[in-house]
Length: 464
Image (cartoon, rainbow, N blue to C red; front, side, top):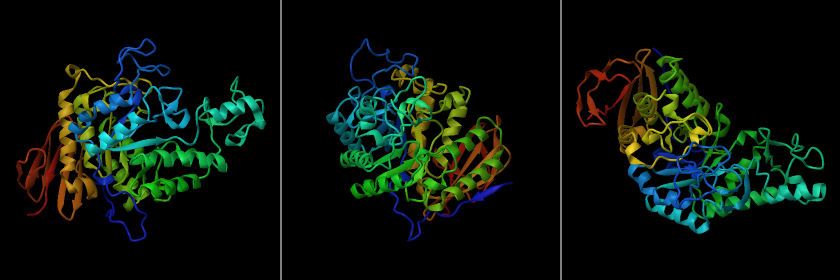
């Protein structure tokens, strides 16, 4: 048997301030072009629900998001992460052309303010994408450099290797990941830095609740993000700052640059155990312990835990189209420490390979919904929101057998044991003391608990 026990999440007096609302949050990610379109048919757009194309738009907009906020409220979602909404040239909008302007295809400032206001009325917070490592080819500053070369006042906003500036056949300037349309920004330049931080102030002042940092690890000078954090916190001390990190995230959980990180390492560990079966329960326990050590106790409850995103294949597809395995994966995610995030459409059974298929239009035809999964996601969110141990408890992960893992969440006011069985047959797990099934309210006597095949049981084991 292998086990891990991470330290309590109580912050030390010298620990950095992190927003207290995050451990209680349930996040939902939206890719705005593909969530909901309020406007009518448009010949310049793909038909809604057409096979997604990297280069074409389906016309999702901010009004569409606002009109469907009740779907999120009914789910129980409390925080919404939007991929970029600023003016850009692509449907993903990571190629910003104006940091101060909502993309016209999405709407305008009034639409944005209405979205924020109506989300807040439903106790749903809004987190935006901070894309400051690079901008878009169409950004006016870069276009000026293209026209005027070294005489442009913006020449030093970028990393130009030679003039004249050209993208053909190879860029004569540095880019993000070799993409010619994503010129890299020289954030050490004072005027550019001021421009970006003015944009941060502009949107933070409009009432958003946090920022997700896009590829922050590609920035050579982490001092930029430390200053970014200061700018944000001067306006909203409780804004959440979360870094996109695919590797061990300790550098991004110290509180100097960000509060925590997207927990792609946990995603890998869960899928290796539950879906691909490359590892056993003992390895999962060890990997969760290693993540906790890397992240640190103060940040563990603020990690953004996910199983898929706009940058991965969808969970249903990763699970081979198997709804039971999809639901088991989600249940395990909701059992673990950190704020869980649902990628749009996963709750109704949407599938899709990696980009562009994972960015398909949200399915609004209820006749095509996987209502069993929808009901389970709704129940998981309700269960987590109603359990202080699941939201804020310490975490002890142990291997019961190679196929069964036990996740104990300990809080002074509640203790919960979650038993996860990946096997194709039921498992019987010893449990003591007696408890209550959190999902059904049924008594669970001390002794052996039956865990369904590909199932999970949440037991409140608080001594009364």
